[in-house]
Image 1 (cartoon, rainbow, N blue to C red):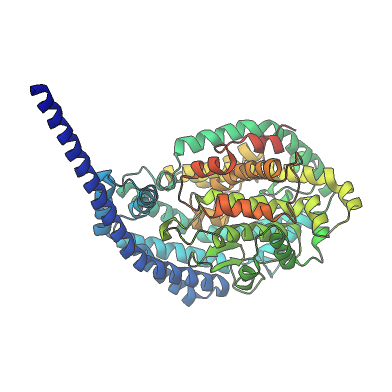
Image 2: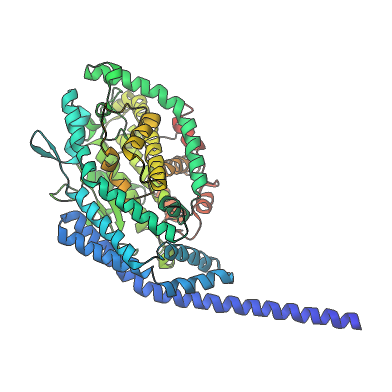
Length: 562
């Protein structure tokens, strides 16, 4: 009888404990839902206003528009500095009581968003003011060569077509002049970002940025080391081939090749060393219409996106390209500066890849989760489509060439494609390692660091006696910090997605198809990549979509082990 009483007592305790636990879960989940309701009421209009203001400033380049963007960005950011809100999130998180899967994910995302902003609002205001001022300098800068003001597109045209070393050097150096105009400001901004990161308990801003975006800094560095080892031998072989071709082309010795001979401001794109001129096929092409037709054929209608976008050059306009999700409800816009060449065909397809991802999010998901699973997963989609610009199968499908021309350029275009991937891979190594080292010690000789990395990873010789902040000419380092490594991760995922689409949807072992006329490809992407948004950790999403976690295997299969 005594034993029965003990058992009964234990059962009562278990029931009471479970009941208390259920009550705690109900209490904390209700508290989180109430928090989210108030949060969304504040953040939705603030984010929309800031996004529109930045868009307007990018188009006009006007100081008053940039000031408005700065003020609205600060107002938006201040929401995440609220210490009372963060304390509430911390209490809910530390309770461990939120069991609902979607709520738990939203809690995780919101906590990280607030955690990265728990510093003095004066510091954040200073950071945003500095970022805006630097961005405006980049936006308004134009290179000057022989008394002429040149856009980035015009500089690229000289670098890619001229064979005169003096003209090439003058154009390259004219572009690099922006570095000296912004370098001191960028270093000050780096130190301010580090100050903020250290106040939040991180060693530096680079480390903080990765960790708050679900990336382990040690794992990313390990992956980049693996990619370095994987690509170095093939790149070295191709680099020797490039140098031989460029030396003959420009009438100089191989040992006299300098950075301005590689047909690009940063050697981030492959120089033209193969017998195919991709720009030739786009000289009279309607790049905007080609994009609309292609995306529509695979079940991703972008006509509404194009209608809201700004695609051509204007005075004062930001000279780069980006896609922006204004309200997470369908107002998605693309900024480009189209000229009829292969690079801008790539860029146009790239940016509308981003835009398609954002347009097709799941409006039933909570506002905080209505973003891509990770910044590199949206880069992967953009790259998957940007690659089509040099794909002869795509060019036939889009009626740019006929099948006879396809046969003629099929092998050379693969060589161009492969070379581009390897050139970009080595460039990404430079930017990733430079940023990591810069945030670890911004007082070191950054000019030397930059060229040490360029020589090691790109195998390009530094100009003699040059001691200028060429690193600062790359806008991403200042305005999109600690982001660049995601481009290379995006390339890995793009190859993984391409393999899955070809093998499992199109049922082919031809990995160079364009998907044209196959709306099931768009349906796959919408259902498995776009609509899930950020409801899962990025690697969970990738595994659900492809059956595997992120792997460099398919990137290697495409570009290295041939």
